Image (cartoon, rainbow over all chains, first blue to last red; front, side):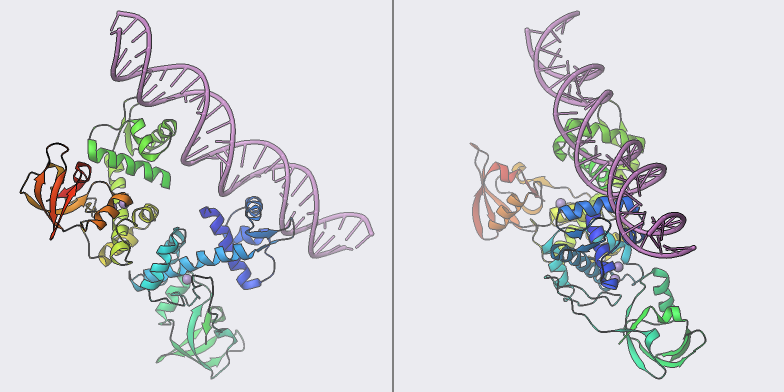
Length: 215
Length: 215
DNA sequence: TATAATTTTTAGGTTTGTCTAAAATTTAAT
DNA sequence: ATTAAATTTTAGACAAACCTAAAAATTATA
Ligand SMILES: [Mn+2]
Ligand SMILES: [Mn+2]
Ligand SMILES: [Mn+2]
Ligand SMILES: [Mn+2]
């Protein structure tokens, strides 16, 4: 399996995670910053290899084989991110691009030993679940902070947007995974929030609140 | 720089390490298990990028720029081998192929943090020197066991052949880096050796002796 | 439902790195 | 110094992964 094939599978997997329906050629092209015609070429190839169910003009979905392959790539990506943060002291906004490279290293033994070395973590530095060696995922129920109401209290357990910009903003506001967050006020006009993080009280926009997972 | 370009540079570097003279197209082709015509194509490209000095029909050598690039790849290869052996508990005969992949991961910060994490080792699991971040190498003088004479005593500090077969043979004979080796007898007929490793006394062929570095 | 807009596919082309076969050059052997 | 052998380069082709432009199919709109 080539890097390119792996990247397509992973993209289809991620798009399916949020929508669940069949994925369109254009959705893949946009996410991968490539052209629709290139996507069509690749879908034919992946279909040939029984990694996706593809019907011309009708969108695409992963086969069981394709889904497992995609999960193994995601597993590698997230385990490497853990390694970078926990062992090499990278911050959570620096690891994604390096993990994009490391996720393509081919060795089952390597990834399983890395998993053990890290103490078999179930979540990566952004709160996303790590599939085990068989592709099983422990799904933790979590809500967006934006769906919370006044006086509710929760723990920050994940981020939806994992861009460096957003993560650095959270660092600045001292919001991290595990932080306790209390809703002090929800402004009805713009759906912004006044929240308490630890001892500090701050105001965050709805856009921020829509990218923080709370439990 | 592509994987392929990096592999060519590394190969030229390794061939130069042993012979020092200009490297022939065929020598590269043989080492990389590819065709001479492919090598010619690549040499033109590397020459265009000022990574090698290439004169048609006359062989090739690395420029300073090319040599530094090659050293950085070797640095990555050997640091990853250290990581695999020391942190993930791989044995020294299992790490080369995985390191062949890992050496192409692009991130200066990653490799320097890995270097620190490992305690800035100067040698990899096979006794080969690890270039530092500036490309400097600490060369340790070492001789082949085959050049030793009766009654001499030394410490095994490296292997010339790093094939899995050879390394497994050494494991079986309980010869490892750091083992003390004493020449009990040198057979003039076939240049085989009777040696003592620790408490055990064994006979090794000249071929084995020609692949063990002693200090 | 006919037409317009959008999406998707096809057709044909480019780049990278490989190959085979033939030509050019160098090296070795009379 | 020729000729023969080996090495190296060139010429032309191919697969992978991408592209642009045009055609086909689907979806939305009047
Ligand atoms: Mn990531
Ligand atoms: Mn992540
Ligand atoms: Mn190696
Ligand atoms: Mn090594």
